[in-house]
Length: 292
Image (cartoon, rainbow, N blue to C red; front, side, top):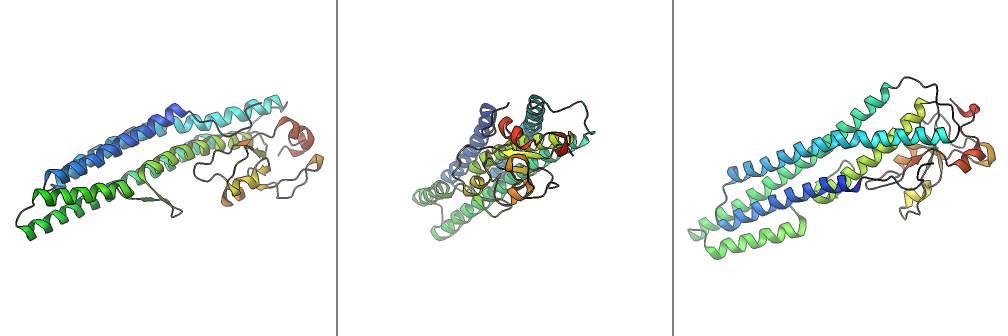
């Protein structure tokens, strides 16, 4: 059987993308600070350079998403087939599954949209910071008749402090949480990779007519996740909560309910798995009576 622990991520591939985000972020902040230190900022020229960096980042991120998200989805699908086969489930018959192609496309689109929103948000935040710094320089030029070296240093120092304190602006996700650019990019790629793997497994099981999965158990401290560790859930919701299985076990709820309750939160690594061999034997979850 496959590992029953958290979803395994391809760390080198994920880290390479996070490093790319970090390099671009570092270059952007350096560009802003350098322009401030040099004197009067040319806003239009600076934003052209910065947006060029962000557009290049967008291209590289898009390539990663279109390559890696389908891989994680297919990982989940392969684990489902492997584990069901080891449990002796008949896999000779399956429903047609255009849903797999559609699900991958939807995951890719969702991830691309979130990445695009982040990059757009950074562009807006940078534009605001550049404009704010430009106005400060302009105000001091009017007051002093010129922008002195001491004033330029003062404005630049304040800008550096602002960037050190809060980056180049916070990004807000759809739940209203604020993230720095580097933290958001890290969370996004990891969360979407786990989501793709879990959806691949769930959809492959439904394709073969099986509705029950077990959530991995790795002693989490997250309260919502702890509630669901090791529990049996319905993929589709068609198996009602409280349904009694052989051996005295019950269906704890549905995947959708668990997600709404906080499972699969950002950075969550919990896996939806084929039920463990021991539990499968006790519950007879994959015997014919439970095959939809």
